[in-house]
Image (tube, rainbow, N blue to C red; front, side, top):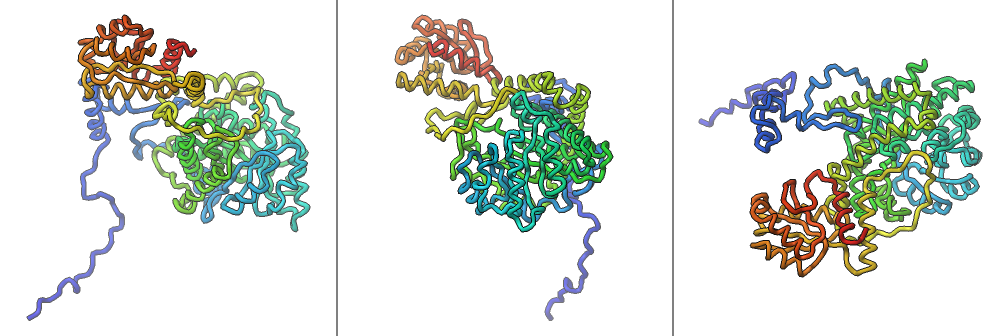
Length: 622
């Protein structure tokens, strides 16, 4: 008799009403996790044996430039008391300005172009994935020829005239006459006298934007007249909350000017587009964009226009993060910035070409920049989910903290008299300078590493050469690029090579066997290379005399002892004395250790720029 198949007669169990992931495993408490973290940090000596539970976790907490703590772990308890973020397309717009986000076609891919001879480049971009153009232009005389062939009711053009009314804005509006429906004109006029003041120290009165704004409000419902630009503040080294506070104050200044001229708040708000920097710090960028929408919604609510449309955002890969040295790493920085801008809900995103810090872009670098966004939208599918970071405990916590810090800075600016007064009085510059000083110290000590520049530099890299870009106006807030101090030493090194045939060089006085010195020798070589300094080493040695004999082969002015603490204690002093007697002018030690007879130390967290400068001075290349 054949066996009976009872399985076919047994009904399948009903699906669970609630799916509990990993429900078969016992739950882990925060205290259990903290105990494991404490154990690791106790072994490494970062906390004491009798430290209280959670001391190790506290050691891992970092702080943003605003002082906001960022914890290594977040749970639902960290967001339990936060205000509701709402739904997409409704105030406070934290989750996005529209109900369906950028889906299905993605956000507006906006490419920047400079100069009068860019018509072919613009058309090539628009034919290959770019959906709008950010055009730096002069008085507008060339606009008709530059934009010939561009369908201005399909592809918006955002003008960049520096923020002033140079005539280009009116010339652009006149182009609407060539459309079947002039009211279908798209674009942004780029008027921003406050941003111009931030960059140059001077600028027209805020009310200068009123006539054109009124014309746009009456005739062109799809055009934005004014840009509220946070880039000058970010480029000066500001904290994210300072960028947020400044843009809120500038936006309010424009609202006042427009409503004083007779526009209602909702109409005035529709004329504004906000521009923010997107960086390779993805979570702060995501949180900043979400916080900006929340803050602007609060401004409109306080202005009596709670149901006005949400803030329109243009996110731009921050020029501060781009490097001239090893510029191909900028491809990665731009990708992360574009990712963060898209996830953060920006309406338009500009990813700068990787050679942006070197000079004028080439067709290749522009192609890679636009394809970066194409990949994020079409292959990574970032636009298929509305607010994909929403609900993440870190993102929600950081969004709330940045919104609160940004609002506090906005209130400080308003109490001082507004955005223009804060610029003219030096208040904004002073507040940003304090943050910039912290950033400069972090870069100099390599606590904030710059890959390819301060970390893992390649002295043999072939330079990327580009035609120079137009000189940017200055005179206002300073322009800060963290990589610049290290790149200045690399330039000095190249000058030495051109003059002498060899780079500035340091001697690595390696004590003992390879296993004993390799880690610190690698550290010293990497730090020195960040300043364009080459290194030669003694190799395995058995005595101070052997090190000095190896030094005789190079006779470079600076020597760096590299070995273990035990060997430093055994023969560090004798080696330093032997090198000094042989003629070494400056003797350093790799590690935070005291060796008699040395002139300085190289260690993680030391002022790398000061060490590099000392090598140049000792070598006569100051």
